Amino acid sequence: MLWSAWVLYSFLHSALATSGTKALVTKRLLWTESTYRIAYNLLAILGLLALLYAQFRIKSSILFDKTIVINILAGCISFVGIMIMVACIIKYFKQLSGMQGEKTRDVLEVNGLHRFVRHPLYLGTFIFLTGLFFFFPMLKNLGTVIIIITYTLIGIRFEEQKLVARFGEAYREYQQKVAKIIPGIK
Image (cartoon, helix red, strand yellow):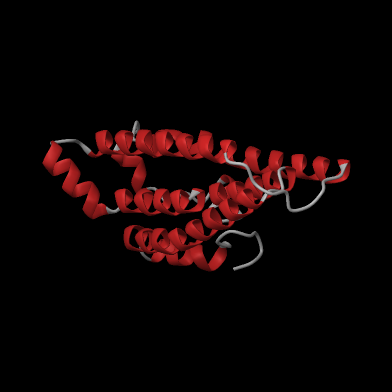
């Protein structure tokens, strides 16, 4: 049931992010793109909070016994992931939230962490989730991590198509120079 909810959340998250859905909703409700983006983000946050609540409430079998070394490594891994995520979120919070004007959306971001990977927020998320799984090595958490990583890797393909359509040759050159997720692996 929990994993089905994560898959449903992922599907709805993607469906609501499409240009077609955005155009339909903004036209029917007479919203601006910024209003839609704010509503989309609020819905995503509320859905995520509901899933996390369920994630913590459901009992699950433990896959392996932890040691102090595993706990320390898991904490360090999660911390690195969180730091990457926070750096990314701070860098483009306004754009993600819809609070920033449309002008900056047409600038290809290639500085900071984007010099090393094209999708640093996703990298940070993967690192964080992996560390979290080793800190809480339960079956429910393993399934959730697999679903989130799979969903994100599929989503990256669609996101990259949009970025090529938006930035053209500049993004294709960026793809040739910078790894997608793991630094050094193109």
